Image 1: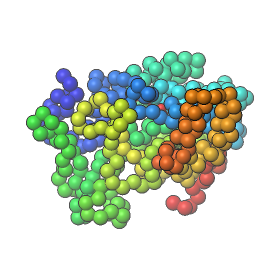
Image 2: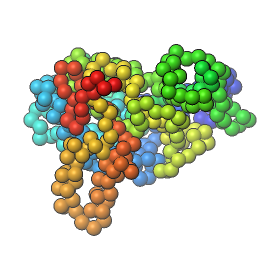
Image 3: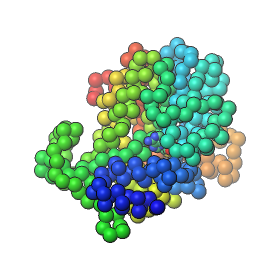
Image 4: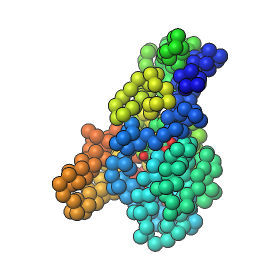
Length: 357
Ligand code: SAH
């Protein structure tokens, strides 16, 4: 049975599905899910991420984590963890960049949270030398200092979406019209979780909630607060987004999210405010990716790498640097939020949030 038929059957039995259910089925259905059945990354896939654009991204994040580790007294052992590692490229670059930090590699126990069997296989190949441990839930991270990265992980978590109607909300649902899937609106309902959004929205406005994000942030933040470490969360979005950010990507272009369930990537912009609010640790100011990478010295690194290149390879290296940092490319849309213990400062490249939020 195709995923469309499975969804039509579910809708016939349960009624229209909240967007979060639709997204979860499309991305992670065990036999038809987008991530469970394929490697979607790279030029031949549907989208390209920062670590796939250039090794410099992972190098900067690796040095940032290693400096935090040194600043906190080089605790050993520690968990070096990644959420949603894709092809394993980012972790491989982090390990290479930190190989010469004395003691770092020996103390690091690599943990990967990955839902996709296809991508776990890919990560096993890329990271064969690092003896990674795969986990199914963040709660399975060991109780020890934690250095964690998550790049384009939170945008893949299912969202719920609501349209304001007076003082209450109607939820976006996926309904059936014959054999076709169509967006609809659920019944009018007050929602305690959205009470604060009555202050900054007007009738007809759309807001989104990512129910899984705060719980993940709380668990990671609790490890960091109790045992030390840091987390770098990188994604597109903003402190508090507004409007419809639900989107489908296929073959490097936008697609209709209901047209080909399971065959397109579905994402939403990340709201960092609920992630920051959920962590018991301290957190940094939300910082544009371009600013963060510049502060860590990506341009100096780019110049050193450029010295060994010419022709096509030099041109694509320069384009990659621009793509990662320029405000018109990924530099502003992508943001970085760090968690750190209250007893330590934020990782390099980021400022403490203090009492500004
Ligand atoms: N971080 C990588 C890949 C980003 S794509 C990069 O920057 O290239 C999103 C990744 O998160 C994929 O590895 C996907 O399989 C994984 N993923 C998505 N939802 C997940 C979930 N609920 N639990 C665990 N992993 C998930």
